[in-house]
Length: 502
Image (cartoon, rainbow, N blue to C red; front, side, top):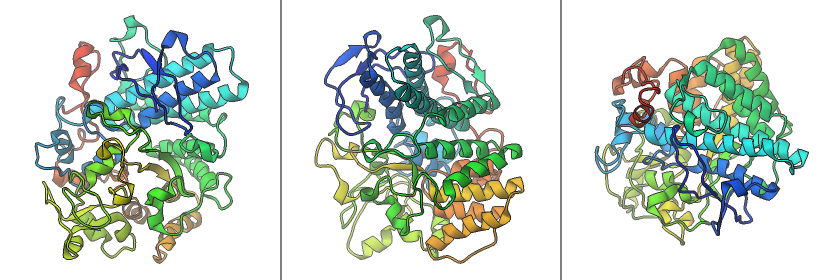
C-alpha cells in the first residue's frame, strides 16, 4: 500500500506531494524504497497503477485522527456493542458516539472526515493524470478510471451517511479554491455517487484474478450501486436496485458468488475472498509495521486488536484491548440462533475452562468473534498489535440477498422471490422458513450481519433508530449525522457549516 505521511487529509489542504514508486508482488502492497516528485511521476502504466493503488490504500485506514476503524466503531454506535476500553476516558470519541453525546470537538468525526476526503483527493488526482496521459492503452485506461470512480463513490457514500451536507469535490483544487468549498446537499452527493458508479460499470471485469484479489469487480460495483439506491429511501429507485441485486444473487451469476455452506467459514482468515465476499478490504502483516505515529502506513487491521479481550490468557485467542463488548440485548437476540457461536465469544464459558482476562469498562463478558484476534494469526514481525492480517468484508452475498428482498417488497416486486432470498439465508444455518415481511427481513439482517458494521445505518434508514437507540441518547434531527469537525469550520472561516444540533 502507499505510505505517504505528506498527504494532508482535510478538505482545505488537498495536494499530494509525494508518492512512493516501488511495489511488491501482491496487489495493494507496496514497499517504500524511494520517492518521486508528483510532477515527474505517472509516466507509464506501472506508475499510473501505483497511483490507483494509493486510492485503494485509504480503504484500509482506521486511525486517521484517532482510532476510527469502521466496523467496530459502527457496532459501538448501534445496539450491538458498547464502546468499552479501560474507562470512559480511554477513547472519549468512542464513548461520545456510543451515547450520542458528541460535540464539534468530541467524537470520531475528525478521523472519518479526513480519511474519506483523503481518498477522494487521491481519486481526483489519479483521474486527472489518466485524463492527461497519452501513453495508456485503452483497456488499462478504462479499468483504472472505473476503479478510481468506484472508490470516489465509496468514500462519498460513507461521508454522506455520516455527515449529510459535505463538499462535493470532483477535481484537483487550486490554492485559491482550498478554503472556499461549500457543502452540497445529500441529494446532490447521492446523484454524483450514482453517476460515478454507473460510469464504473463499463470498465470493470466480472471477476478478478487470484493475483488481483482486492481490486474492484463488476459485481462489487453493481452491489454498491444497488445499495446506494436502497439507502436513499426513494421508492422510485428500488425496482432498479432489485434488478441489480438479482444479477448478483441469481444462481449461475457471472461473478462466481454463492453462499458459503458453513457460516463460520465466512470469517475464517484462511478463507479470504471466499465465494460469498463481494467487497472485501485486504489486510496483511507483510509490512512488518511498527510505527505507532502512523499506523495507517501499515497493512494490518488494528480493529482486530481493539476488540480482543484485555490481557487474555487461554486457548485460541490473543490478548486485545477490550473495546466493543457485545450488548446483552444482542446476546439475548442471538442466544438460540445457530449463528451465535460464530458471532459472539462467551467469556464466562472461557473462564470456566481456566482462561482469564480483565473486565474493562462496560464489560458484559461477551465479545466480537467474527474479527477477533486469533493466536494462529498473531504477527511474528513488526508490532503484532498493528499487523493483524484479518480482512474486512464490507458487502457479502447474504447481505445482498436481504437487501434485494427488502427492495422487492418496498417496490411492489415479487414477494415470492423475496421469500426465496430470506429463506436461503436462514436455511444456510438450518432455520425454518418464515413469512417475507419487512420486519422479518430487518430482524434477519441484525442476526445475520451482527457486529459487521451494518446495524447503525440500517436503524437510521429504516426509521427505527429513535425507538431502538433513543434510550441510549439518540435524538431525531441530530444524531443521524455526526458533527462537522470544528477544525473544518475554523480553517474555512465558517464557509463549512455545522450540522443541526451541534
